[in-house]
Image 1 (cartoon, rainbow, N blue to C red):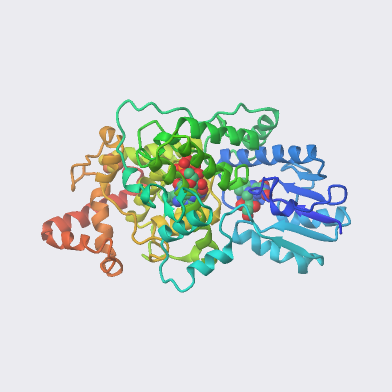
Image 2 (cartoon, rainbow, N blue to C red):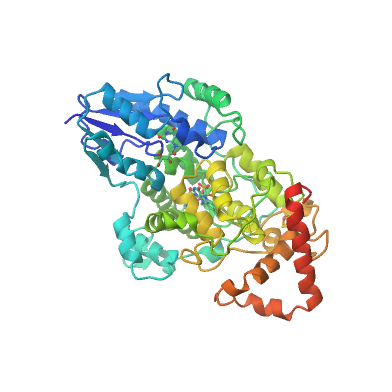
Length: 511
Ligand code: FAD
Ligand code: DLZ
Ligand code: SF4
């Protein structure tokens, strides 16, 4: 049966299930650059360029392997701009008897796919995405009957299932988790290796021109552009991380240094999420480095946990809880997103740097996303819809399946604690301990109230006071109310007044 194998932009792997049993002489593969996908939220320019260039390189690889590829460029005259439109056009242009896809990673796109059989009158086979280590049925069986989920228990199951860092039934080193060793503050004079740099070839240069022309009003810097855009390059980026940064990954996982956006992180999320790298090969490479004594256990365990634990856990929750998950707003947060998230214009040095680097690189590391950008959105009471939209736009690794649970679940606690056991709210002390941002800030981190005080300090308490009814019974954060209750009335009123003043000035760019 002649089939159309549609490959979505984040499925760029020759091992993808939709290519299995493909009859190269009869079937054809379709990949499309689509205006609708690039603009349903206005993605960062670098993210669009990365995906288009990677898609074009992947199509070329498939052709070399003998596949018949129908590649639709953004500026093809008859491009209909949407997946459905392109499927319809392909059906009209070829005699197709069935459509085969690997299940799309996003709920929105799956809805589309599920309408095609009826709409086009031919069978549509939706295959499992077996790039992930935990399939969705397995996850929902694990989650069944649990009122709250905890990543740590899921992670242990995954360690056992894939026999990673295991000694028989016991975890390597006797402990499952070495996170407590992974919180070293930054030291002066750390030597941080460069992130991976590819040199833009002709394909990438063409894409850069196209993106500059078509998406000039989107957020972010297009150049310099140095992401890997082929599997070989992505493997080289992984190897570079294993050799140059993994050994320090654990120690400085939570550290932030001004003008050091990449730290010792791996910078592979873009490649993992679009299919250039597979999760198991990344964690096995790290395990091998440990076995060869090239990296310590705390670093390797931490890295493996992020990928087989957090990444899979986020995906499981997304599919278990969509579409309701996108609408959750536990704190009933109402504020708009302030312009500083786009302009980086703020006196708060931590936020200024994190937005500036995001704009330049389409990347910020986890603690910048969590404890600076996310924490501020949480304690300022910004509506989850706006926060989610921003995070989906600005990062080259952002797709709803992973962005939404991180934002709504992990930082905004918008699901009321289904995914995380407490909101990651914090005052300025944490940022001061884990970064050097406060040294150059106009605000004073040691000051708790008043015009010069670090806004995180009073906003934190104001957030707790505003949400007392929802948080005082939380066993991880509830005890903070005892501290709040011991404050005298003048102090409480200063917290409230400072927060009111600051939050009302947030929208006139003076803060
Ligand atoms: P490393 O720190 O080197 O970690 C290794 C890998 O572990 C990552 O590449 C990633 O695949 C995985 N990982 C680590 N933490 C998480 C996590 N919490 N959830 C899922 N995977 C994880 N990650 C995305 O891939 N896409 C997103 O859109 C995204 N949005 C986020 C939004 C917020 C508010 C927060 C707090 C986190 C978000 N993350 C997201 C998770 C994490 O910040 C990024 O995966 C990480 O910063 C990517 O950089 P890295 O490859 O250098 O990661
Ligand atoms: C994010 C994105 C962008 C910017 N452009 C495309 C595109 O042109 N073609 C495509 O197939 N996918 C693109 N994507 C990824 C999709 O928005 C979506 O996340 C995936 O198809 C998975 O559902
Ligand atoms: Fe950020 Fe406060 Fe430190 Fe300034 S003082 S950098 S606002 S934490």
